[in-house]
Length: 112
Image 1 (cartoon, rainbow, N blue to C red):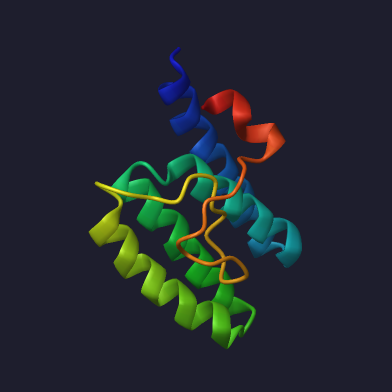
Image 2: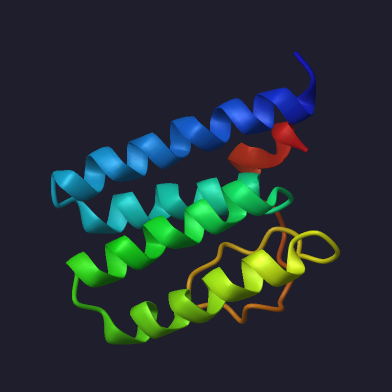
């Protein structure tokens, strides 16, 4: 399997872990996995947008208005900008500027 195929597979693993944890109200851990999914999926319009959609669902379930508003903007931006530019390593949450590149998390480096 290529790194790109492994990255896609790991994206869905991380996304599903986030969904499971969200369902079980383990909010902090859920968001961490949604961030990992975002990092892994941000070069693909569908996966990038899907990761932001789940961050929005997280924000709604936790009643986090700032995250909710931020994710709405990020969903739109992911649709428009993914095909030509994404900030490498950005975790996708509103606690980080949407245009800031950051180092890829150690546990995810093997997928890049």
